[in-house]
Length: 189
Image 1: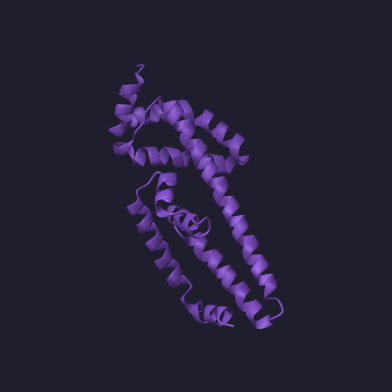
Image 2: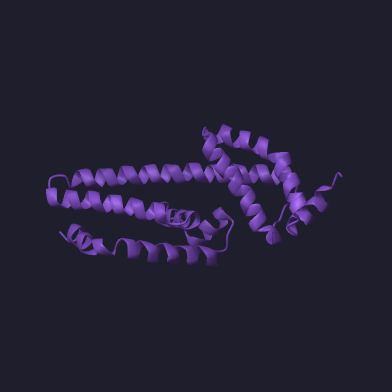
């Protein structure tokens, strides 16, 4: 049975499994190919497209599709891929910054060892954060975006950004507590 866009969107908003399955089967292959063209990585493209469908299902009640479902999905995949690429760029930039900072301290062997261990622990702690939590933290701390800008960029509420930042800081504080004395030593000389 052929559905109109409006009735399909309405069914998706009501979490109709048959409608969702139809949309998935109709668009997945093309969206995956599109994501590959943007990311040049088949596995990450698959992950990105699946993430878009997951969010579509998860946020069904608040789904606002102003045009066609296909246009909405392509835009969502496009944004998901760009966010991933930006995240990779931020990670690379951060790693370069940390490497540069560590190189500057190489004349002090004790500090250098502690710095490398700290860098490793920070990287581990960041990677262990839930995806959205890590993304919000990195956008705030590394790209210096305001909470409103993060909320707009990720299509979430400012309250969610605040909650995710609080969660990230609590987790990082817990995971890095043993390094507090090392940090104080490194930065108070």
